[in-house]
Length: 159
Image 1 (cartoon, rainbow, N blue to C red):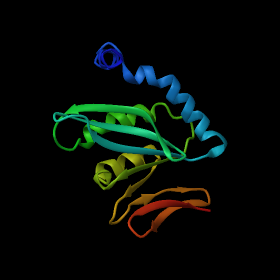
Image 2: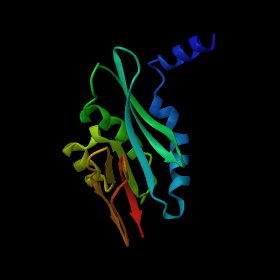
Image 3: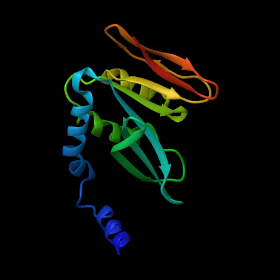
Image 4: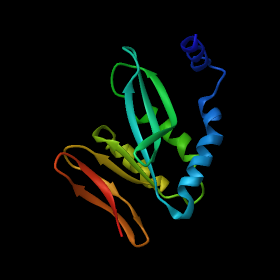
């Protein structure tokens, strides 16, 4: 019974996910950015079923990811920038004024279009993979740089 109710709710085209999530997401983002804290926003894609993929933009809270916006697409392959840009724009619209943002994603999100989008929004960005990492962020005396570990590459803030 619960599955059927959730399935009908999520399948209802009259419910705007961004509209429903906006008050909650705006509050969480504002609290997380309080006192000048940088926001780590993550992007990832998941297979929903054999015909659909979902891209999700989440806020990193400790070791958890809190979904803020997502988009579904009927495809068996990767979702391109034109499609996941809509989820990023939804999150960007919810950010408090002056928020510092670092977007993290895996190697599939290191596209020139995304890097340009991040720069235009004033966001830092990072692409974590077993290979190289692009990082770009300078705020006052703090800057982002590459930090290698045994099996992965990540970005860290330097004081």
